[in-house]
Image 1 (tube, rainbow, N blue to C red):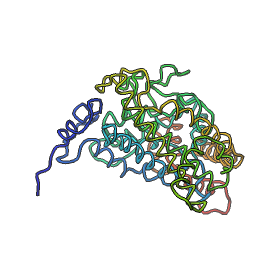
Image 2: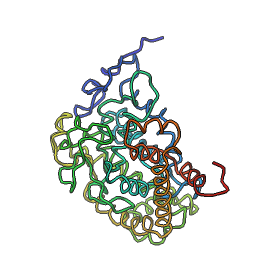
Image 3: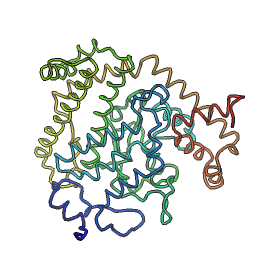
Image 4: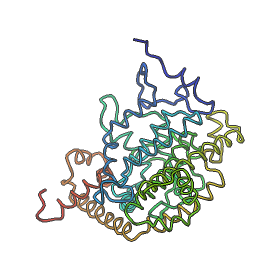
Length: 412
């Protein structure tokens, strides 16, 4: 059997000078021995995959509530799609693929049940108790709420993965528009944000992360992969649910461009297969553009190290102007016809009512919380304990809890 090799020399040989390498890591809060053949970011990935919060993503909503159908995306399938796209981009740009994968798999761990509507109502309910933000909650999950190791609280992830969770943002967030709710979601490193995030959140200190420092390239890759995954799987789900009209999409230039390529390549396809191939082509067009444009920007901006990326005030990983312009009408179409469709609005409004009623019951009578949560009431603000409990729920579990608490003939 060959002797196990440390991964750091391999990174030095294979990765670009501007990639984040294990040898440059700020490591973990609690010191651990290195592994003989797994790098630090590989170990982070494995810890994330085995976490309870990651498994719960299977039954957490993207746009469609879980019971609407078995074939719509969930937080878990979305997370896997983000990881796939991000790793493809990272590999071509010679960035740290292990780090990108770990951040991708962790980026939604702090999300509530019922998508953005769940986050919105929790933030309202917690406004006098520190608020709620899914990035900050994600950091709380991996630093404190996960309980799997005897030697430390949380997952003890590396500083860079934790920074990636905290500083993850899409262009919707940077523009101050949530993808579905239209609410502002300011991020810690944005100096132009209209309200600064606190230096601590529910016991998790944020002082170690420079709020003014732009994210490293690996984080930027995950951000843009998240946008691509969102847009294209929402197109797919929207068409399958009949909430979107394929004829209307033919008037949008980017969709038309992708459909022409598919039709020129395949002379005869049934409608279902054609839609699949068009969406596949849309992803390919966008990823190819990101790779080419980002490589050009790295050269033009003279990015030769991780520190160069941290000092650059511009987004380095980005679309070219032409593709960016083509994407805008498609995103506007999704906003107007899917996220603001009356059925989606109804689902979101119903979800807010579920969460608000659950929250009121638990705050009024906290003895109804499970033992693991009740034990925290003497150490933490009851509002935060209830918030953690609800935020960790899946859609399915939240609906079952609602029935147990409010339907008289339901077994408790």
